[in-house]
Length: 496
Image (cartoon, rainbow, N blue to C red; front, side, top):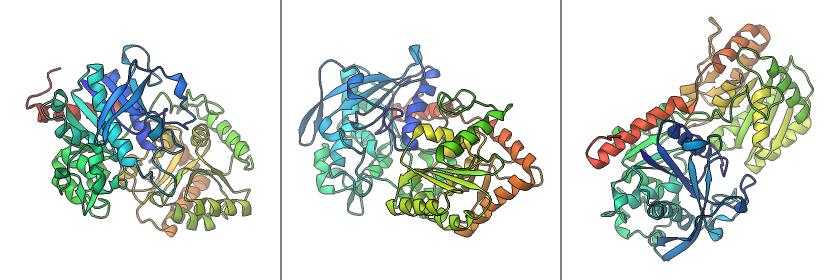
């Protein structure tokens, strides 16, 4: 099957979170199953992992039709790392320096770029235009989040009576909180007419909503965990689109994200102090000592080390963590935080760290290598999200024998099995009500288990490390989704 991925992110070329990880890994798992998978994304400037001049350029220029006229761009090419030979996945990066050579992918921390409609309409239309230039017509187009949500809209409108109209489409919701709400007066710039500004296309309470358009136009929908697929059909989690999702519930699948085994494996991770495995955890002790040294905490193997890696954001429950921390810093435990986000929260955490330097260290920013060392060196991992479509860090943590402490929502509820004091089984510690006291009590529960039932900690680590979160486990579910989408679009089953 020929499958086109359209995404604003793809690791390692550019990522801000789980979207980039998924698009960097799932295509490789699908290619291993024999499919011809290709990825299209923007060529961003200002990314430390990507140099413009290191990628070969396709001959000639691509001309992308937009509402205000044709736009010419270059196309750089590459391969997703980790796989060689016939199963290597080709990636195409649309080169438009005016739109993508900027310090941020979507806008500053306080304000989105004012021309995001132009930027991501160009991505969606450009990906389809590139298919004609390559003489490669996909069977399925897999669009990701609001930035690529116009792709299924284009397939149903401007591509009607053209070869690409036969392609089925799948739209994956990675985070429904971000929908691409824009000014409806600007829709013409995307090359679409005002006939699409209605409740079963792109209009949402007077706004232009790219995600909503994709939800109505895609052949099938998916999101990144079964629990989140159910949650977003409720008003509390549906972010105003729960009615659309209830109406399309029969076309919505919840499929867990997987891990990229090429990157996340403590037995062969070159970024950590010492490799280790489920059968020999001695290397984790060395990783903890090195992490304590690196972040400036006292080197005490007996003291439990609790970690956070991620955005300092309301969605992630950082405000609740802050309240709980005021009591937890007086416990016999250490804490390390790696992240960025709310500037006031960063400052507050830094001030708390200055008052308790032997217990709490804050590293501001995004450091992928340090994230690996934290997963390997920590004993517990905090992830008390208000909502979590899937989450990957709890999977990374389990893979590295670091027990997650989570709020049971979305993908966290699907992937973390709560500790059972009677049997000593489980893969983490979970709670339901997101309050400082609930989080504080759950952390205290984990610490109490560390000090009083240490064999249970060791057993839970081995149980967690034995779980299979690889993409090879979940790629088959996407394969079936593509076949169902193809059959719906073409009116006959896939015969490959």
